[in-house]
Image (cartoon, rainbow, N blue to C red; front, side):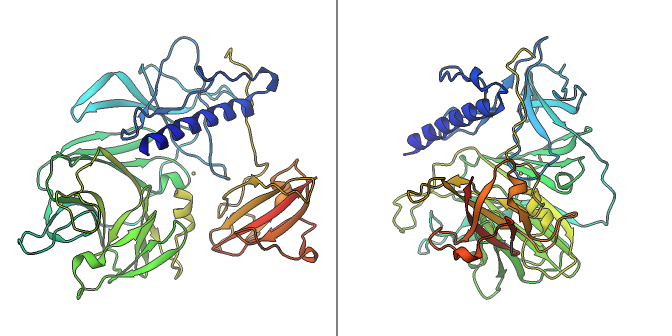
Length: 461
């Protein structure tokens, strides 16, 4: 099963490479597909289904190498691009203007205290900004171990049961590396079982408003232990915090002292936050994990579990197939200006030569407002209509308008120009129920409700 899924991912990467090649060519007649030798290469390679992706090393020479960057969001963004090269003598130039771009070259580490002499990391960005100073907020990051119950007649933790014993702090001192530069600064702490990195980007916009936290965890040498990362702040949230249900809607959670510790852990799909009357601490996660707030101001997530025994819930074994595991987060500290129980707009934004002549491919003529996202755009087969209709789901995140846009209003024809729409029909998310023909919108201007997902069935001329 895993092998088939792995090969499906590899085939999908080939489709992406071929599609990007065709879309970027100025002269489409030059397109030639050679499966054995792709014109474009991904910046990461996967050697096996249970191995982490590794950066492709770009070999530099006197001839310039082209780097194509894809923006998966519907808005113009300023972010940091990271690549691996084989020489520290690297320079990054904007292919369209010929101007040099701000870049930071840093070491690539093969061991906690050993630097690679064959690889170097280059990170680039189009703009930089010194962040203004703000108020001081107390915040600590702690790592703890949860064991399991030790009495012989008690059930122990397993694949389905979480029955922890007392928590134990990580007491051994780590090896600490500090990096500073014009693009970012970071601190890396190398412990015995994990590596913890906190990075701050010196950028304008939402990319420079959060801390990037990454962990590389390996607990294969442990027995009946579970590793937890805990944030300790001075946010007075009481016994309430929030985690998301599905990456979109947030649910209030309560910590009850009368319940055992395991009953106060909740699922977190992609986000959780603490808040009081004046501030909010938001944790955005790239992976689904368990989350808890056992004491006021604290937020903790379970990083990995290794348990030897079966919990008699059907699996028939413990959790002993651990691998080297990566986790990624963004931590936001925000002023709380309104009583809302969903993620802020800033939190949503934090989650996006001699070669044949290429041109930028812009599928959207305009940048969408910062609080509206295009979730999907696909064609639908319809035997009753000659021109194929399409399905266009749009998501409106907040009730705060962006810049000069009118709240929740999108002109579809301006957005997808030069495409012309014959009709635009509001539909249910399942596309089974359309609005009546009398409600069709000739102006193609659509109003979206806050915190809602809307679907439209469109026909092209």
